[in-house]
Image 1 (cartoon, rainbow, N blue to C red):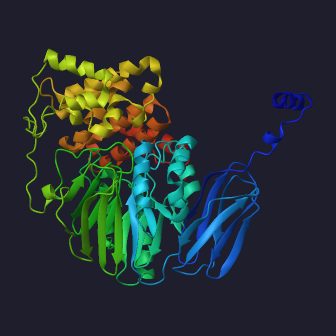
Image 2 (image 1 turned 135 degrees about the horizontal axis):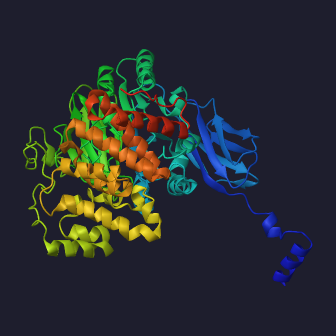
Image 3 (image 1 turned 135 degrees about the vertical axis):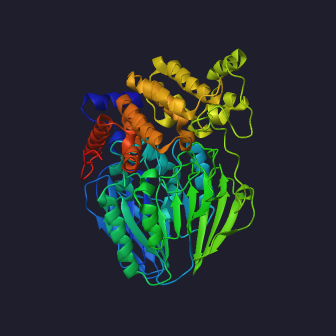
Length: 600
């Protein structure tokens, strides 16, 4: 009978009552943003457009803030709140009420507080969920995200997964975020700003901003900018100067950015940031702590009086450290984790914990003094004054030999057995190669292996095309084997192979070769690193596709920044092509001002 009634309604041009009265759903949120001592912004996305209201309850009673905007996504600002006060809130739309959330406004004056640092939670929802569950069980006043929330900033599906996992956490705690390179893929910056537009004043389209909380000032930066143009440095210089006048003496100054100036992970230091002189600018203007991500690890260190923490273990594939540790590194662990930071007067404490809640290490410092930490497995090999691991053997040109792994013997060159085993690993992936004892190098630093092999985790389109899957996988494995064994080939020689593949218009092979070489960039000379950035960026650009273009912009920007210090690394034609490519990519990303096409 029900089926007959539905058919009858359709014949009469009517819809069943159930279709007409689909209940309103909260697709994203509600969640809090821009939390300050006197206000907050409540944001959410509903299943349909229409007006709504936010109901707030606090010590002064109940109040409402309404929006008549005909939109599905809303942001309602609440003002006139009391400092250090807890409020409960809910959203009501189309007769449906959201789950109740709560927030506590920022304090006025010097009051102890804490915040959680985490980042790089793209790619693996299960690992991301474990980290978020641990953070929810850890009380804090707010959250700091170091970037790469999603795999593809332009993907509505990726953002929905992010909010589905983080929804209960963001409902009650404000998240202040630095933009990551994956948020900038395609038109992803628009989505990032829609969901996490910073409080005012903000610079450069909202991707730079500062936040004051108690006796600390946070500077959130777009680390993926080229930093060789005056607009980036000028904004930061102005903001550092403005806040120095505004803030009283004794305020902690903390920089937050996705790819920082210090790292011993596969990405290494942010070349563009360092060569642009920003590291020195931060130090000169009193920034004492840098929080970053990008490398999917936990790392803590100190250089020239500036302390740093890398927290990139929020769910993305984990990385291993490079074979050449930096003397600035004090602790390192490849683990899913988060970091709880507590500030009390001049003292700052940090507590790094794994996703299962176990302690990585506990540290503290007082303004102007070095780190003081309890000894832990993460920090023991990196104690100040400890000797670093021996460097790999070098050939006559002064570069490490690619077949050398610290602590491991190289396999016999050209062994048919080794090649047969490696081919067998095609069907078993990372675990099989790791079992052979060559996992880190053969897969391009473990968690990065999928990039070298062209798998979806690295944003490569080839494996999305089933007909080419095994061919791409074989190419990636071939590149891995070239570095893992089968004779001693220098890093420079592998770069030359990638360049030849690019010149032959074999862009996928070039990307496979260069992706496998990425963990060992420090073994190349400065000129060779410029060539690497140029060739890899141009190869990704020629491959096309949204994620590939996002990474192309990243490598070409690094190449352009490095070229300023090493102008002879590229020929005139290469410099012009790189500048033109960056100009086109900037226009496509909707930047306010495209990169200048001039050559250095």
